[in-house]
Structures are given as C-alpha cells and as structure tokens.
Length: 307
Image 1 (spheres, one colour):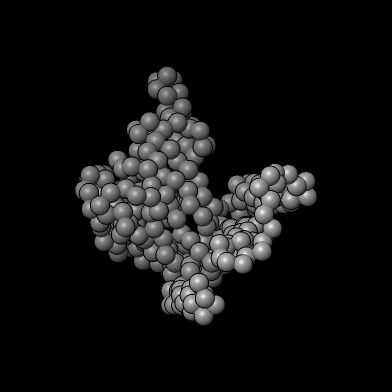
Image 2: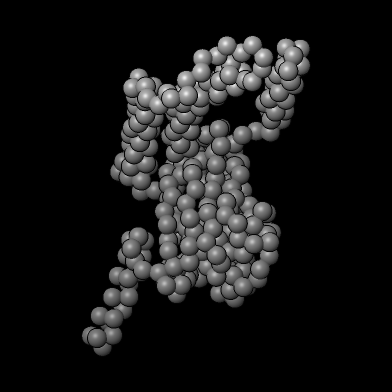
C-alpha cells in the first residue's frame, strides 16, 4: 500500500471519528449530567473508570497500530525476526502488573462509594418515602406521608433525601432508573428494594424502566418533577382536594390492563396496598419496610385474644 493511499484511509477514519464525536453533541448525555449527590458520586466513578481503562486501552491500541505498520509484509522490510522469542520479564511485569494495580484502585473506589451510598449518614430528619410499583407498562407511585398517588409522574422536594421503595406487581422484573439523580435498582414481585435519591436542582427529569419487559417497555417512562418544598406542598394539597380517590378496583385495573397509561393523580389510595401486594407476591419482611404493618397485625391479634 502506498503512503498516499495510507494517508487517505487514515484521513477517512479520522474524519469519521470526528463526525461521530461532534454529531453526538446534538443529544444530551443525561447520565453525564448529574443533578443530585447520588448521581454525582456515580458520575465520579464513571470518570475514574474511564481514565483507568484509558491507561490500558490507549497504549494497547497504539502498540497494535505500530506493530501492524512496522511488521507489515512488504519488500525490503527489515524488522527483526525472532521466531523463538518467548520470554521477557520486563514486559510480563508491565502487562500483568499495570492491570493488577488498576483493578486494585478501581476496586477501592467502587467499594468505598458503594458502601457510602448503601449506608448514607443518619440525619435528624427522616427521608421522605415514596413507594414505586412497576406494572405492564406503567409506574404507580404512592406517597404514604401525603396519602396521595400518581401514575407515570412523581413529584419530590428539592434538597430533601427521598427513599424510594420499589417493587413489581403482576409484572416481570424491571429496573427503576432516573439517570440524573441516581443509578438503577431492580423491581421484583415479592421484594421491596430501596433506592435513595436527592435532587439538588429544581427541574423535570427523565425516568424509565431499564429492563426489557415486552412490547411496551421502550415507552415505559415517567417524569420526575423536583420542586421547592412550598411548591411540592401546594401540589400535594391540590391533588388531595381535586383528584379522585384510588379504589381497589382502580388499582386492580392498572395491574391487569397490559399497555401504556396516561398520567393520573389520586387524592387517596387503599391503605397498605403496597405492602399487601408485596406480601401476596411471596414477599418477606427482609427489608424492614413492613415493621409497622407487622406490628399492627400483632396488635390486632392481641386485641382478639383479649376479647
């Protein structure tokens, strides 16, 4: 291959790479645009992982390109020929030692941040609880503190830690994901998983089911609206006074009707329905979410015994 042809091909690949990079700027990479403390920790992990991987990947690609060019088959190539070469201690230390060091560094940061997110510092003010249930192919949110419910839209105060308790009802396992605020956590029938989220900035954020669950999974999206506490309280009060109540029949219809659903708001919902459906789907009290419910059962049982 002549140098002219090689330069033309190299120019083509360079232009193609630049086009991909520049044109990709037309879309916002929301995963790389954190708006809360949890997402910021995960963003730092992405940056650290990328840098550590680049330490290995870039030299390997550069050496690969050099080897292909230097030892290519062409007349007059005077590259050294060593058919019996099989050992070099220095190179072995490099190609084994560098990855081991990188894995150790990556493992340290991963373990540190994972445990920090799984066990956030205790605060005097308990987190706000929102219960999220994935169905085919919609999301239902219960607000125990406000006694309201929504479908495919969730509101939360800015600057306040929110504990999402997530499960799946009469639906396959899914994944609850708000890229700009937190990572993913799985929703599974009979399980109530926890995910801590906090928004530091007011705005509307994209939320989605991140697992393949059938025909409508690609559109199984919801909107997260983070707003000041006063606006959140005003919204909750407005829902409480203007929206219809969610009956068990309404909830069962959401569960059994396969397909997408429009945004809905409810001024109330059947008490304890989230916990009941988790337990009906084979759930156990492993997560500690249902301690109040179990205590209530015990109190009722004691009352019956006394009678």
